[in-house]
Image 1: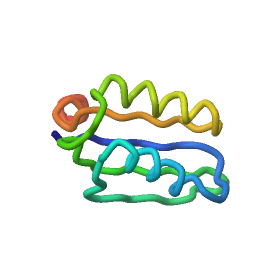
Image 2: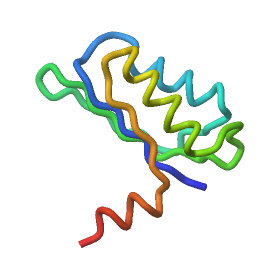
Image 3: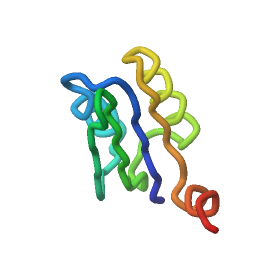
Length: 89
């Protein structure tokens, strides 16, 4: 299953590395990635493949949210089909 991971927060060194390491620990493959810095704010959107993931999407959401709190970031994961349905006009 594909999912969308979003990361938003104050820019600093190591954000991409920390998020990617957490995804790798759970066998989540990054298919596409886009990131930018808007003034002092870091934003990143990733399309990921969770087919080999060792945790459920709910467990990953909790893990990413907790990691985000520890790093003062907003980190979210959403199934691709739900993301598409929410953003369809």
